[in-house]
Image (cartoon, rainbow, N blue to C red; front, side):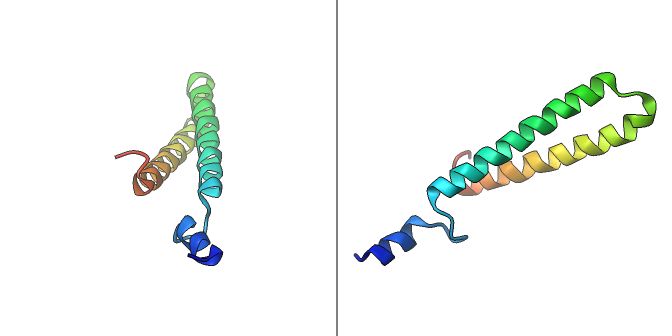
Length: 79
């Protein structure tokens, strides 16, 4: 097998190496953790006028969690 063929098998369909995929997942997890921390802070300290904004941020965080979960399922990390 040539080096080019080996490289093709080491990459996923999106062209990312396993190390790049792991780095991407770590970045997504960091975003989720930041969003979750912000959500908790907003939920605890948000005045009523900020309630709608906090709800939108919670929905955004939930959407990100669902997206990362789908990605992890596709990668076979979780089942």
